[in-house]
Each structure stands twice: as structure tokens, then as C-alpha cells.
Length: 278
View: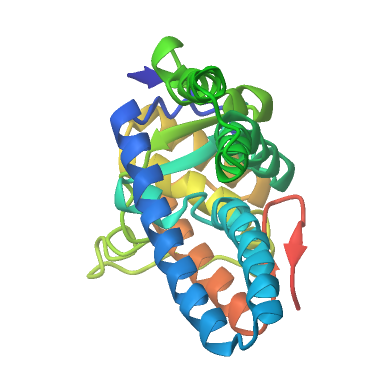
């Protein structure tokens, strides 16, 4: 199932939405990883614990750690350059903004904060009541029904969105890009590369690099021509009639420049000058 995804350069990349089964599998894989980490932390805390009072403190720390890990896991990974948790990367999925812009931290936090209400809040409440022997049949049915409705929500809307995706303005899409730049920068190594000035390369950052990669991988002539034309206009470069070659060379040069910047602590996030670290 494809959707129109118009980038800030005016290019429609026609992205493909991730399937419900792929998203569910990614979620399970992430939770397996979280459980493995929590088991390791549990053994460490039990090893360090001594008397009964320390065991009770350890149990409290474990609950806090689980809350922080399950929220931080999804949020921090999706805030990264790939926009995907390890589970999503294994299933070749990533999170993007539906408006075609850069995925923001606020959107990632919003979509993952809603997961607490969708799934974990009712289940945590049910587990707490069950531990006190106060979980009757009605409470169990209500908690499972609440969680089930939200968990299955992507099956009942055309864009396969969670409630968190509705609120955050995000999509989960197929990501078939593979290793960043591995094959794109290897194209036509026999021919001379175009050389670009620092001013020309400063027009774009990491977000735009990802857009360039998507455009090159789709190989659509209209998209390649649109982006190549936009770069030439901004950089004041002449049109030599080879849009794909021009864009491939620009992508390779931009990739190399951004990587050099990261080595010295500079990370240009986008063309507007957003940066992190120094």
C-alpha cells in the first residue's frame, strides 16, 4: 500500500506503508531485546542486594528501570538518524513525518508516550490489582479489551496508524535503503567525480542526505531532475544534462563531508543549520 510523500523539495517519493504484521513483529523483537536487558539487570541487582530491605529497594529500582527502558528504548532509537528501533530495522521499517518534513523529537515522544496509555497503563494496573488478589473477571476483561482495541487499531484505518501516529503525525513505512550510501557512492567509480565547493555542500544536512538517497534509489527521472535542478539553482551551478550523475556525485560528496564533520564533533542535522554536538 503506497502513499504520496512530498519532500520539502517538492518530490513525491511514493512511500510504501509497513504492514501490520511487520510492525507487530518489530514490536515483539524490540520487547524480546528489552526483556533480555532487564533480565541481565535483574541478575545484577540481585547479586548486589543483601538483606530484605535491599531486596525491596532492588524491586522498586527494577520497576523504575523497566519504565525508563521501555520508553527510552523506542524514543531514543526513533530519534536517531535511521528513525527506527532495532526491531524495526530488522523488519526494514522506519518512522517518518507524514508532512514530508524532518521527524522531530516532539513527534517521536508523542507517538511513544501514547503507547503507555494504549497498552502498558491498563496492563500495569491489572498486574498491580492481581498481585493484591483484587483482579476480578470484569476488571480483567476491561483491561484486555482496552489493550486489544488499541493494539489492533492499525488494522482498522487505511494508513495503518496507531493512535500515537495520529497524534504525532507519523507513518511507519518500509525502508529498503540498506546500508547508507554503500552502493550509491560506488556507482561509476571509473569516471571522474564532480567537485563541489564547501558553500554548495553546506546547502544540506543529514535529513536532506536521506532524501537524496531515497530519490537515487527510486531512480525516477522526474524526481531526480527536480532535486538536481533545485541543488543547481541554490548552488549556482550549470546544468550539464546529466541529472543522475550530478546527483550521485553530490550525494557522495555530501556524505563524505558530513562524515568528516562527525569525526570532529559537528553534526549538521538539516539545511536550516540545525546541529548537535561539537
